[in-house]
Each structure stands twice: as C-alpha cells, then as structure tokens.
Image (cartoon, rainbow, N blue to C red; front, side):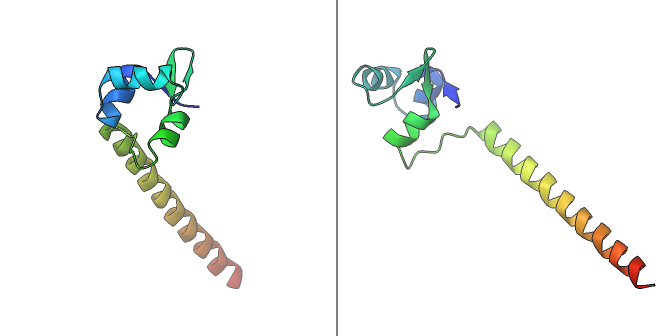
Length: 86
C-alpha cells in the first residue's frame, strides 16, 4: 500500500488540501497512519494520474533496463542454440 501525505495527494490531484481533508472526514478517502492511501485515491479519482514526474522517469528507466536485459538474454540464448548445433 502506497501512502501520500495530504499535501502530496492534493498536489498530485490538483486540488486543495482542504478538499482532501473534507473527503477524508466524509469517508470518501481513507487514511492509514495519517497518510492518504493511493488505493482510496484511485477509487475516488479513477482517471487521475498519481505519478510524479520523478516517478515516471524511474518507471521509464526501469522499463528500459528490463528491455535491455531481455534483449541480452535473447542473444545469449541464440548463441547457446547455435553452439548446440555444431
């Protein structure tokens, strides 16, 4: 479970902290240990994008690394298959 502070949640949703607090008070958003859960934000705002620009960059970097690893593994497997044929 990912948790955001009230301020972080408000910034990522583009609304005021007051609106977040009101939604917590009326039960629309849920908290855990004083933080707003991203699960409850997604339920209340299904079309919202909760990723910050820094998060997006990290995700892109991880995906790029995974693709490179996959390509390297494919090349290694092809090399091994060629070796078996001889």
